[in-house]
Amino acid sequence: AQKVTQTQTSISVMEKTTVTMDCVYETRDSSYFLFWYKQTASGEIVFLIRQDSYKKENATEGHYSLNFQKPKSSIGLIITATQIEDSAVYFCAMSYYGNEKITFGAGTKLTIKP
Amino acid sequence: NAGVIQTPRHKVTGKGQEATLWCEPISGHSAVFWYRQTIVQGLEFLTYFRNQAPIDDSGMPKERFSAQMPNQSHSTLKIQSTQPQDSAVYLCASSSRDRGSQNTLYFGAGTRLSVL
Image: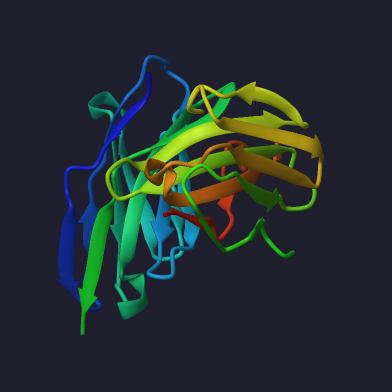
């Protein structure tokens, strides 16, 4: 079964700095997708970025990037030049090729301080 | 593109009553997913449909919960004889099979169900 673990319950950083959120996963397959989602204070869940397991290059999307370490089953989310509006709960998630069910981690609450 | 639409946004039911939650996926998306979110359990997968056919309902409680997708433009989640422990935010999401976005979910705003 898929398992996704986010050990950081909450993180607080100053605005305009860089933050990294950790995520490790358990997988039985060599082919899978990894995702990061953001849940805002209003409850809206927004897709941010994804990494396909067969791709060696780390995915980037705007000021989000990933640190994919396949041998460690780790997929960290890096946010550069943080802004107040980046304050949210961030979820790591995964699914297998051929199975669209996505399993989510428990989430990391990020607070950006002015 | 209106995104995934869920109605109602809030629903209050009395214990033992029935609740039906509605979801309209993004036009052109062929898969619809239902999740439940609580403080204790986090985001729990319930069930999903691909091209209106049920594919995986492994997260659905065996009793009282059922989901349907009668056409490509909407899905329903029905909870019979609601109990206080059913109180949660129920989230619907949809996805497409387009290359590069397969398995990526786009969520609706959710329905907050409160069972008194």
